[in-house]
Image (cartoon, rainbow, N blue to C red; front, side):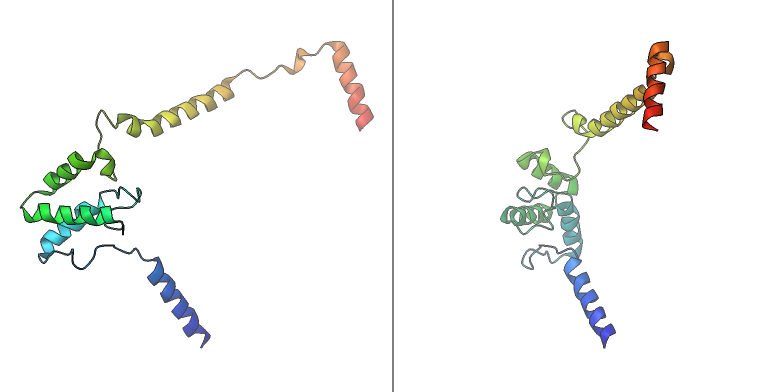
Length: 153
């Protein structure tokens, strides 16, 4: 009996944890090929409200409008690239979940590498920096240090 409860809780957890697609039944195209293309395109476009969710996963009204717009474009026999270009022209590069490499996004793409290089340079500089000399003490300072160490021991 205990195993059945554990199994039920596990199955419920998996059901809740699975990604929910926000595509409504009235949005789905009758042509499965076009629908698959629409899903593929919308999975790569960012929801303008949710920001880090694709429009395929978002319940926001703007995301729904974009999903419908994509399907309308596909029904007009536009290629996937033309549909994405249409959306980018309308909303800007920000709508892409994976930004393209261009002059505008070069800083975005290069920043992680620059940070790694700066970090490596700092670490190498610390290792190669000269260590303070132990023999920099005068004879009187060495005797005073020895006396202090003997008292504390």
